[in-house]
Image (cartoon, rainbow, N blue to C red):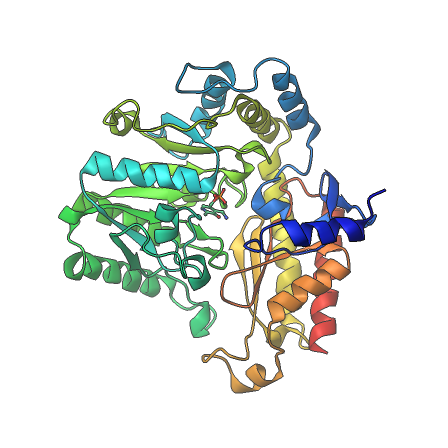
Length: 444
Ligand code: PMP
């Protein structure tokens, strides 16, 4: 019989080295907020497969919808004809779009593929080439998506040349300047928008620039929500200069931040919105949503893909949308979020460990702790000296030993909480306790 040890050895021999892994254990099943490994461990999952299984693993309604669809039609192929789950899903999504103008849908398989399609769309629709993306952004692993990704050099290193015509604008965040509590965020927003205006004067003329793409909450860039005023400023700049605004809600969308889409906090109208991950709770599916008058400019056949809008994934996503409504998922996000913030802020206030924590931030159940870093130039020298190196990776590892899956993110010393959106108060408290213990053990 197969032992965990021999399977892991097999994996290490035959699975590409290009993937990194949090654990060498083999995950065999998942239920709700928990996964079970081949070695028999039960792990509390605050990773959700990187923000995907947002209704918990194997949500019965979603799994049943997918299983039923498997007996009706698996592969519909959207370039051959409409199929029912594709259209039903649009029917479910229309009323929850962050703006009523978003009424034209294109389903793809992954976040990267959706970003890629959005980049193609803005170029052909505007007949302009350049794209502005934001410092810290992650948009995916394909060549266009890599080109607009600015969160870690490793993602692009050695893969050039990427898609040309990409410029980078600053994303507003304070925490690295150790800003005093209550520092005036509007000053930072103003400065960031000014830099963007300068970019359009100095580096890429609006007449050469198709679009701005932004993750309204940086995900792989460190869980930094954009101030709503910044997003409003971006909209104004796009309107003033004739640029399209692409909002990437792949990680922060679909209820993660306590609204269906984070952009709702700003009231801003996206020209194109990209969403994926939680959309189908684990079945591969992503969506590029725009307004019809934009997508009417696309020539038939210029978009496509063999599997995009797969019938099983769409049926699962229909169930996800129904569960969101019927199980009042957003209410749970907001209630658990308040508990999570309260707990983490009290950890930060704890004199024994709080000084190693630079920042607790996020929105809804997309929350990060950033630890002080001994190599960071802006920190108080005493804290720098006493804070162990690689805090985030060490906390993540210690949490795993204690039975919690907790991911790191960004080039900063950051761990991120992405629990299921229907996590129970008890499981949330259990996870918080594990993180607290892990931090205490490491800094003592
Ligand atoms: N955009 C964002 C904001 C993401 O977080 C990700 C994935 N982490 C992607 C795009 C790429 O999605 P995928 O991995 O499905 O290609």
